[in-house]
Amino acid sequence: MEPIHLTKLDILLAGDTKRFSRADEVSGLLQITIKGPLMLSAVTIGLVCMAECRWVENPGTRYHREGHVYHNKRKLLDYTYQIPGKYADNCLSPGDHVIPFMFKLPEKDIPSSFESTHGSVTYFVEAVIDEPAINEVHRIGYPIVVEAPIINNLNLSVGGSSEKDLSVINLASGHITLIANVTKKGFLSGELVEVHVTVDNKSSVDVTPRATLYQTQVYMCGERHKGLEVPLTNPLVGTLVSAESSNDEIIYLRMPAEASLSIKSPIITIKYFIHVTLDIPHAIDLHVNLPIIVTTGSAFNLSNND
Image (cartoon, rainbow, N blue to C red; front, side):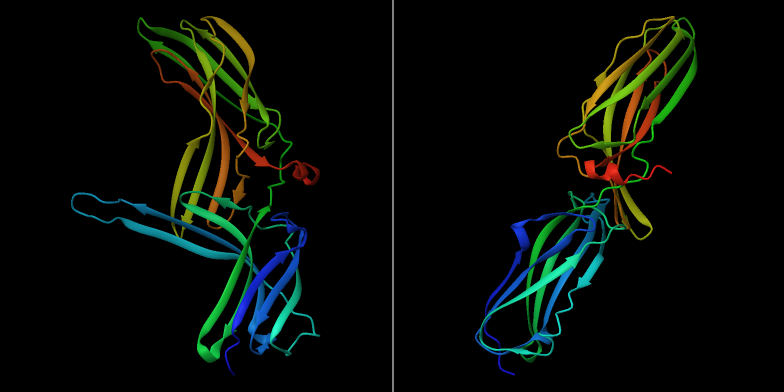
């Protein structure tokens, strides 16, 4: 068969939107302009989710100029649109053609879109035209953003405690207890988080609580993984608790407006926790970690707290 002489290959999404949620319909038009005949069997329209991570361990040293590169790439979603029967096996004549398509995103088991230095989760609508006669493939991808928030346990409270006895000769003595909690586990980007902190200071030194929000990024390549803990806020310092006294207070943390949704996938996991520290002079500090979830407002309507 003679070459198709493709002059236009374009994707238009309905409503000109690029942001979708789980179970949404992704629909639009594939526009093709050709100067030669084209078999519809050579046209593929797909919806793809690609997850990828890459990092280097032990990079450039005096004796080894290159480190070991770990790379993992996998399709987490690969739907092919079934072109309706009225088009099947037809040969498109030269000129302009429009083919409508529609996909439905899964209701569960897909991650949200994400991008960082070490990895990404990307969704796109893809059109491919294969010309085996001349060994050429025409391809176009239209990126979209998918929000697939975690919905489990969003309304459950999260808490923890830590305590210790001080016995530093001539410097500190006594017993200290730190209790921290949040009234729910799920939060929205930009939301103000109330961290309830209780300090029971039956010691001879003054102590001070502080709280910091962290994001944990985990990238997986087979049995190898790379974990990063990234502080998203500066430490927010609470009220000093004098020796032989107690205090209850709320430390307010603001979720960053651009915070990514929590993600769990075979390649990339994104988690969050609030790290509460009690600064103790002349001794090892007390710590409590409160795991939380960054989600969307609509997810609370579907939340499963079993």
